[in-house]
Length: 116
Length: 111
Picture 1 (cartoon, helix red, strand yellow):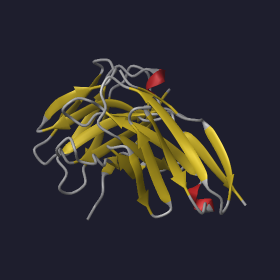
Picture 2: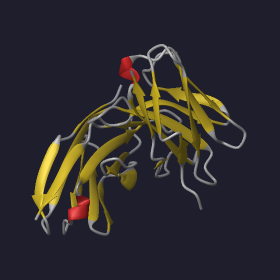
Picture 3: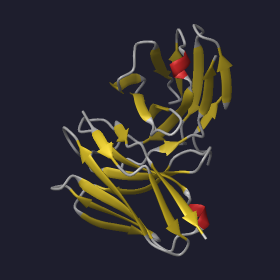
Picture 4: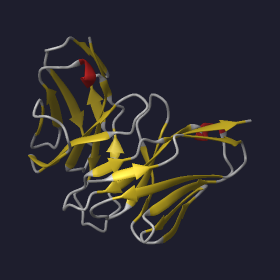
């Protein structure tokens, strides 16, 4: 059973460019969340997708957008890249269970984005 | 909004016990999770508390006091492989599963 897979593993872009990161969730999972993790910091919630819709969003500008496909895989798009967007981007998958559930999130290894 | 506080670094001796504390301020609360992340690796789930009390999973235990907005992760019989960053995370009060992470505690286990 494959876990959460992300691609690419590393990416180098220049300021102003656009980037697309991809995530395949763990088999059977229907919810995908994206996080940005700067060096030495905790993951920061970007947004979450369920049933192909953005359900919740963190404090990130509209330059950050996403998509979820019918097979539950997801993409994160970042436009007009800034130097400050350099970070590890993590995808986490989970099941949209009841509120009493443990809400275990399974993370991928991430995409390391460097903006020059 | 949500905010979490945890120590930035902890050092402990192999075989010993270490406790990592976490305090949180939230507008709503459904549970406190703990995740482990080795350098260059992905965060992995360790434990979850929704109710007051202690949850034990092998060498790891997690405690929650909702009235004090406080929890801790207890690691026993420390091993060198436990050297990693440990994050507490609060589940958002909304209907979905937004999770807010603390900045992480870097644990160094020394011989």
